[in-house]
Image (cartoon, rainbow, N blue to C red; front, side, top):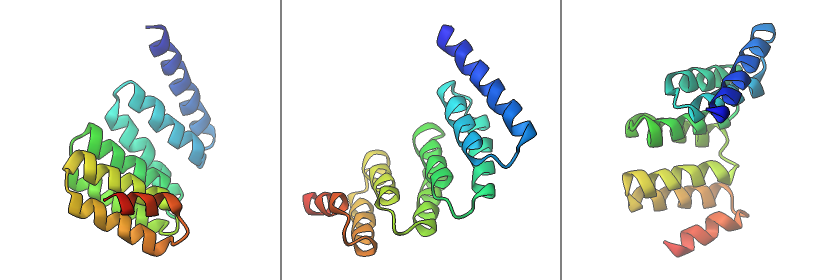
Length: 138
């Protein structure tokens, strides 16, 4: 219960911070993470959706929403949509391709899509050695 009460206190603190500054992107991201840690998935979704509205050019809240839908809410279609949006938003970051790859591999168990997203990642990020290694291993 101690961890839970610390988390609750942190959530209250973040909400207070957001009431005075609703444009605090990092606070919205953190609020989502803390809410997810106590299985408040609805609150998590709201926080990350707010973050994505504040910063439409950031892939982070989109990829986080992909993770939420894919691994916690068990909505594969929404998860895939958010992962692909994160890649479209920041195509020059290999990490977002890796997140989508993991979802395709672990959740959908669709190795065709998994390989396709890594190949796209390598094409858009030719110097990303991690993506290249994954692609070679498939």
